[in-house]
Image 1: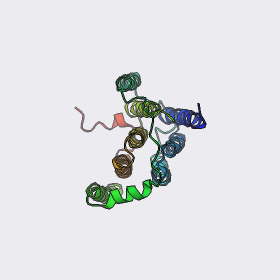
Image 2: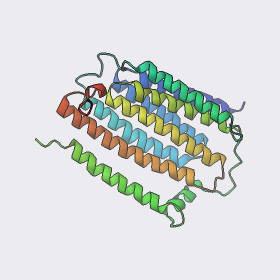
Image 3: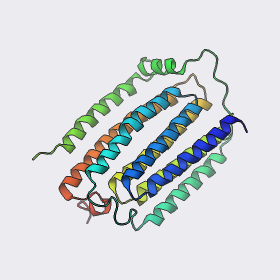
Image 4: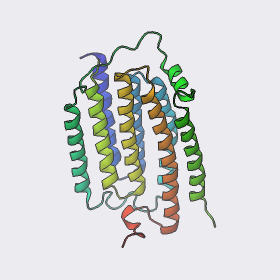
Length: 169
Length: 102
């Protein structure tokens, strides 16, 4: 049990607990704020995995943009179903059963896989993950085509979102 | 060193919680919150497999970046749809949006 294990256990517990609060909170603004806590936990998990760039992107894009967008949407659609009435539908027990079965199935499948409890090799000295990631994203031998497709997807989503939310009156 | 299994179990738990949110919540915005949790669980898996496999192969991190982009697009379009529906039907409860249901 090293310091890394203890940090992982604390961060993992906080992440799962705030995720539970996200799906059970009646007040959606509170749920969105718990989502911010979950996303922070995931960012710390990325740091533990030596993916510092992804942790920064997680904070900037997910917390800075997506979570704030959620809070905006909650405030724009607030008049009903936000604080009053039940927050889950009448089949919520079936949803809970599905979630538990999914977790059990995943855990069963994973523990039967022989690479399940392997540990990571040390990062080679002089290895710069950010540099490698940038090269992989822009070199034709790497992932430049998926990268460009993602850019086009973002542009299409931007135009589509503006069109959908535009008030024609 | 933390074994890979811890990350995979954490991701499976996060995915299941998100699945519950998607299946059980009534508010459309809350359903999208559940989708975000599921996407984050997938991202933890991708980055964990990158770290525990060959770190010079960047596919895991590249996929995670593309998941970020897709999540941003999904949230932008999804919330625009929710706002548009709210303007027309004055509700965001998923089970009241049954125009296509017989």
